Picture 1 (cartoon, protein in one colour):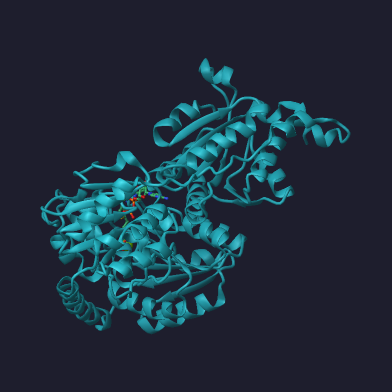
Picture 2 (cartoon, rainbow, N blue to C red; picture 1 turned 180 degrees about the vertical axis):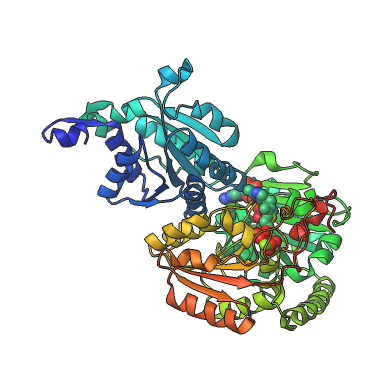
Length: 569
Ligand code: ADP
Ligand code: TPW
Ligand code: MG
């Protein structure tokens, strides 16, 4: 119990109650976390005042849920953790949110500053704020209840403005229980005005870019997850269709414009990267995912236009000929507005050569998808998935693994923005269940998570969370019995399995049965079709253990080029 509840007539409040009031006033409707000293009552009180609290089994998954909810809503997702180990468990997700550009705030209880600063050894004691700093966009500590509103406003602004990212908010145990006059306390509360301000580009930068585009013979637009985050789909569609320029979506930008759009060049990726003479990046960084804009995959004479909210992103990897610094929607609006005199129209020859390659590649892919094999492989299994999903074009698709990731990205089309949620900028495992839960809770739509068997293991215990909250999540494990593949022979002499090996016979389906979820174990395309169709129709927590050939995966999936020392080719 706290002071106010013990003393109903008191005119005092405390830090814990005031923090919940401040969260509520700022529109926070969900908190993801794991409780314990000193934040349990905070979660209880949040629930009391109508904020949804989703309790996880591990803070990393709670953090991922908060991060993806930030991405989907353009409001910072909130993750609540206990001190030291709980804080550190959540920090991975917070760092990842920062790398991905997702707005998130991790609020963590922390122990007594006097003990921490003299390193005298406290229960779960750690100098959390200093540890968080290198991994986040900003870190703040609130030491006094009267600073709560300002502290939260600073955290919200840092998470949302410019390139979004992760913010650490340190809440000391002492602050949570410090009392303050109720009226004075409530007078401190406020919500920041326009925390993600519109940022107009300069008209000079826009005209420079239009001039470059007007001279292009082979223009290309690359759409990144920044455009998805910015909800730029409407204005982007107008720009793409008015100019006739082909586009290439980055992984999480699939669906910003539909994959079956005639101007989508995804199935002719090598051609367009290798030949485009003017490339316009819309919310996509020239990082490893685009080979840093250099090297043999790119036309070395290509000129670059880049639309980004972050000025320092320009020239990060190669010179940008026409930087447009501003928010994406305003920048595209201005491009459209000033376009007319430049007469930008993509030539037929370029589009025709892309169509020809698309056609050849589509036929090759169709051949792979429809060739039956025993056991199944990624292609014929994912063919079933993409057919079933024709009836479910508006659900979230969470995706992680190596081959399970790359093949799903290539085979399963997306038709709507912000539905494909995957390993993102770091290409990291462990997002699966956290993203699934965050998306289901925040977005209110059902989820299909397509997981490698290794990838699933990083957050698998959260199936209890999925069942406890009865979330409409179907987990499909493409089980090849290992990391990349499941047939590697041991390199040792003592009988230990090879480093990439997991158990091919593992019955992941039985795990969810323990929590009352529905389970399928499938070994044929027909079995997968039935199981997936039933699972999606039921919207019930379901896990499908789909056994595929252990020998079909590529080492490191499609990024074997980043693994030059591997002994397995
Ligand atoms: P991808 O992985 O899809 O290529 P990245 O995460 O690398 O995408 O790049 C996204 C870019 O979008 C980041 O550089 C970020 O600064 C930018 N960005 C995010 N939101 C906005 C916005 N509202 N307006 C402009 N740029 C944005
Ligand atoms: C946090 C390294 C990259 S991909 C992968 C690992 C462990 C798993 C691939 O096996 P999976 O998929 O999921 O069974 P498939 O279809 O290829 O067999 N730790 C972290 N992140 C990464 N990326 C790794 C390790 C890795
Ligand atoms: Mg595997």
